Image (cartoon, rainbow, N blue to C red; front, side, top):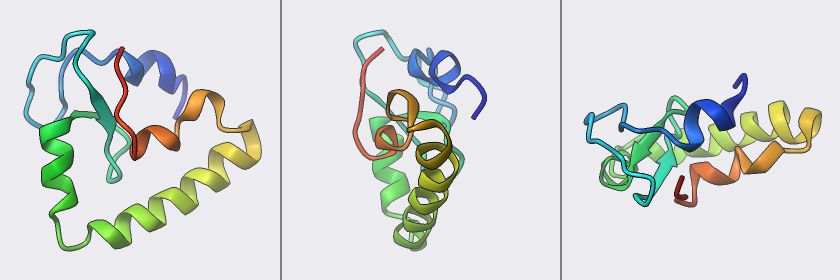
Length: 86
């Protein structure tokens, strides 16, 4: 999670489908690997049978690692559940 904002906030490509992301396109962080993905890939992710368990585990881990130690800089945990633009 080193310098997540610079690495993920303005991602120019979805790491899953490799779709080009324009600055105005919404993107969201994956609950599986914390990478920026497009909204269509997030929808596919949410359909996986283990998504509920993985997302609960991820938010707990995320809170422990960032909110407690860094006051959740700029919403890293938040951006796994709410889409954002560049």
